[in-house]
Image (tube, rainbow over all chains, first blue to last red; front, side):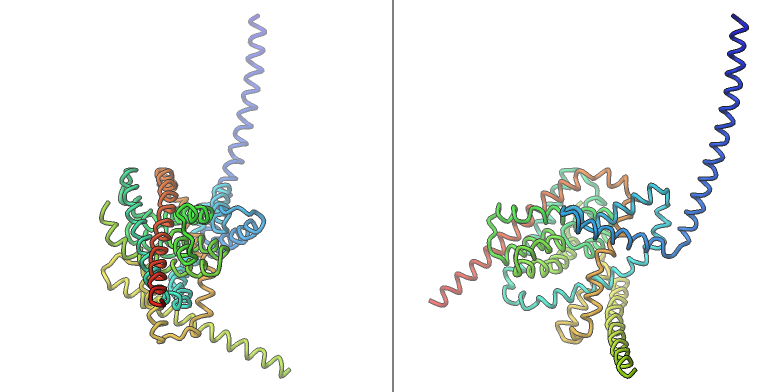
Length: 269
Length: 138
């Protein structure tokens, strides 16, 4: 009895030693892999083009996905962002390594926003035809946005940072990001809320117009552009030429009005 | 030989034109940056630049064809420019999780309201204008 047990113990001891050896080996392999990761991470962090490469490659993939999949949510921007975050997480690449190269792309945001004046200028003749309807409608929309977001933020008990992050969620990304950044919000979350708004507005534009019995093409375009910015404008262009033109006009007009309105409304919460 | 030389020439002229257009846009961006620095309002430089550019175009100080090409290029690549700032939600994941439900609810509800109000108000104004016109004609 005792002999058998000691035999078993000896065997189990030998097994344990073997197991420990294996574990040690595994640990050293892990360590090597870890050091490898760190090396790759350091290399990528030093690389000037990794971030830019990943951005453009994933955007290209997003464009392909959009062509194949006819889903409103599959915009190239969202697909690219999901892909990049996935790649960074799976390969344990630091966000800083990505940002090091990607930040150069963002430098072009200011001149690109300045260039938004050109499409607005091209539509200026339209603005002169119906100034009251255009300014009145868009101003009413912007005011609705401010009051609606304020009341709902109050209801949800959001803090100032969260409230200011959401305030510019209906305007085009370039303008909204600047507002959020300047007022103390989180620009990345503003981009998310702008995307959610744009996708939802695009999908349900026709249903909402029907619900509110908005039938005039000019009114339709203004409504879509003011509420769902550039994403909605692509939908408005599908509905009709007048709708598209009005929608693209209201992107910038609503953007400028929102910048001014936020100066007042940001103080409320 | 001569033909290819002419082609090259045309190409370099258009490239030079593009650089000049870019120069105007970057100059305005730079002035806008200075304005952001000097004016004590929480308004981003790009907004000053946008208004400056619009004012320049309306007053014809900046002819449309002097900025058109580069401006169209910049506005068309804009979605790509939004990718890096959006990826930074990685660094704000907790903040996103905290306000995900209010964010989605507020975005959906206010979008319906904004679209409805904007459309109804502008439609009402348009119809009133049309009625007035008809009255004037009769």
